[in-house]
Amino acid sequence: MKPFRTLFLLAGLLALNTACQNVAKKDFGPYIGPFYTVGNVYMHPSGLSDEIRRVAVLPLIPSRGNRDAERGIHHTQPVFTEEFSRNRRLDLVTVTPDRLQRMFGRRAFYADEPLPFDFLSRLQTETGCQAVLFAELTTFRAYPPVALGWKLHLFDLESEELIWAVDEVFDGGTAPVSNSMKRFIRQKHSTHGAAATELLVLDSPREMARFSLSEVIPTLVKKNPQVAVNPAESNNSQNVSEEPATVGPQPAPPPETPTEGIEEVPEPAKPVSDAI
Image 1 (spheres, helix red, strand yellow):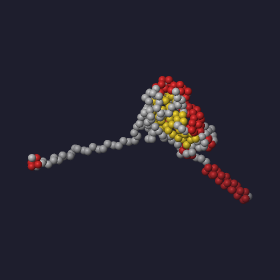
Image 2 (cartoon, one colour):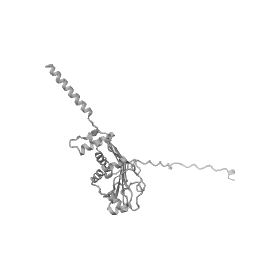
Image 3 (cartoon, one colour):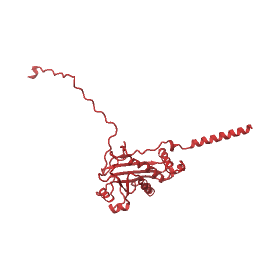
Image 4 (cartoon, one colour):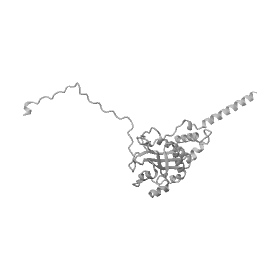
């Protein structure tokens, strides 16, 4: 009887040891963090005006000379259009490259380049929009760990002011981005709570695009806008943006020197010999 008890005890200890090893190997990052927070954002001091309900979205373009980003446009453009269309605050009008070609003789425009003199006014007239969104893909890494970068600018077509700008890179090789994306997949796409997150998070540029845009878009449509300390963009070549408002307490004015209760001492009279 004693050998059987010893055998059962050893089996129990082995099972306990295996369970402890499995717990130790489990990735708790998607549950406890650290998580990623979008920080390189500029928002106009008055925020997104209620008068802006319709936005013209220009074609997504790669950064100048970035061959990887050029190859990534095909994969990210559909996701970009889909994710921005999910918001219920703005109505989007997609301006295709062919339409831009007919209107201005070019298929794409950067936000930081000189625009045709009638670009904003004509875009407003032909689309009925109050704002225009420039979209640029700055980073695209398709192999694990995947990475994506967005550079977005929203301009008011009437006042030509910069309303909102974001310049962010989401690198799946960093713990905060990886944890946040795993949490996003678990909450939005996984029916089992944690299924397949380990593989999808590092292997899918489309999932990275969905996740990154889900982090970026709320900074535009939030109800209480605040100016970032380090804005992504506070000025550009079109000179349509405004400098962000000064953040933080202002220094108190120096105290005034009290004058009451102090008697003025008259200057001594000069000798008569000095006055002659």
